[in-house]
Length: 329
Image 1 (tube, rainbow, N blue to C red):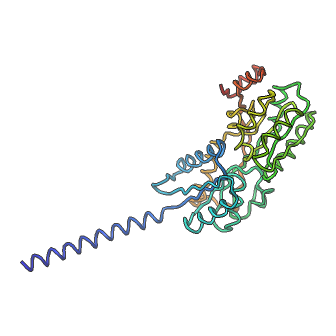
Image 2 (cartoon, helix red, strand yellow):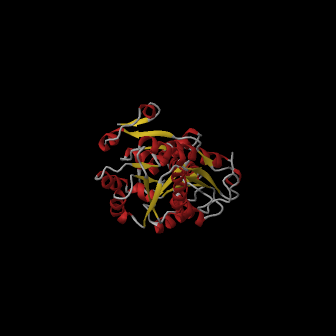
Image 3 (tube, one colour):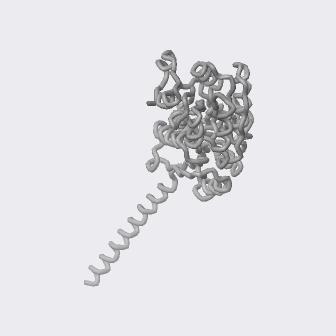
């Protein structure tokens, strides 16, 4: 009996040791999964679409969340202090192998935290002016990614074709966003070349947007909005105020047309995210290095028309434009 008991104890110990070995091995394997840390500046439809595209881009290029890699997502909700804290968490606590910054403030927060871990930019209009890379073609550091630079010339051509009687445009942007300042100068130059008078309206925060739009609608024929996260986050307010005087809005982003803008020539935000995810996958697998990977810039855009908004404003969209456009009913 004593021998049987001793044998049973030995068997139990062996089973326990074997089980512990496999559990430890499984946990170790789980810990070794590559980690992609994603920091998003704020929630609004355009940036949310980019994040969805990133997930798809990673998956299409061999990296599926929860299987052979893991995504750690953080959203700063437009709070600079949160962005700084979340950047440190993604690096120090989550030990990310690759980082993705969605929008300029998020990318800058990551860049201020590390100069070693690869950073992929998602939706940064001018990475050079933002101080993120030395050169678009030869970034030279730990950062590369995708620009969301809009086809401004095509956007104003579309505006003039839809609104031929327009003489004056107001450009609405947030003074706190470096990307916007660069875009405003470019948009102003393009608009003036097309014979439009231009007046810029900078808002220091979202609290002043409604009042600013009220002033704009009494002074301009239509409103132009660059790729600006603060304004995008308050797009419903902008549309509500502009609709009171039937002032058309030409935004830079397709999702802002869906929210009440009249029309644009814009980059598909989901596809922008897919390209960002692809670049992250290439860096993660070792196929590419940030310092030698050029910033990706889209060469073309899609014409987006909000038909319901056009009808609300009493604007007739020419058939030659509608035939080549994506129509939002």
